[in-house]
Length: 272
Ligand code: CIR
Image 1: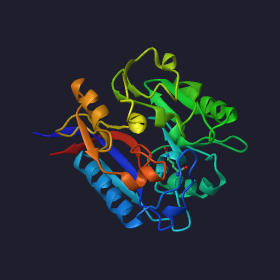
Image 2: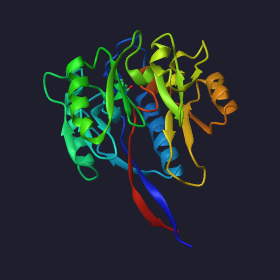
Image 3: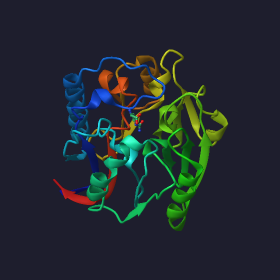
Image 4: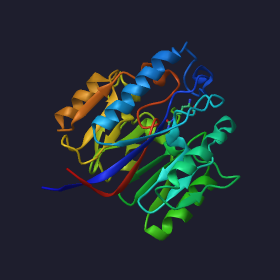
């Protein structure tokens, strides 16, 4: 029998040798073991592959410390990929190679100066697109994204946040209609239309989880850092299929599990 599975491409890039010089906004700099970060990142890619993603690994960028965080360079919906203009100067060089990779999968749109927008600030839930008004993303960035996505029926809204780097540091979708949220950084009322699972008080960074729906035998899986077992337990109690990874070195760079990939859903592929 032929089973037709939806393709799910995961665009990734290895940890730069300059990773220890990453940008930091809310965290204090701690020594980063770049070798360990690379092994943790390789395990992340291996897990995505195991979950049924086709991993498209971009070449390393030795001069761009934060280039492993590909999520910030683009926003992808079914109809379009929007190449961002990252809010920090040191990261603007990351977008060209990501755009070239995405051009194989989607028509491209672009956020233009003087707008700024980091992909980590963009949370799409169905046709609603929430955009964090963070230190990286300005109102012009929200307006340009809204104009690019409006023809496809997406409603884009700017959302204030406080105390964390990106919107998706504070909230992500874990299952259809359910978010995991840290209400200290974001107003819960903004997400009042969804069921909410709060992070454990001792795990403020646990709201950044990666939902992978690749249609493989495990069904839908939520990937999250192993450092947050209490929140993982809360999600598992709701029936979420959680897989954890040790990403300690990536966390020291203020990154999480969504930041290290861009998931691009594709047409069904003939399989088995
Ligand atoms: C930065 O400050 O830009 C990086 N050190 C961390 C970016 C993390 N990206 C993300 O949450 N989407």
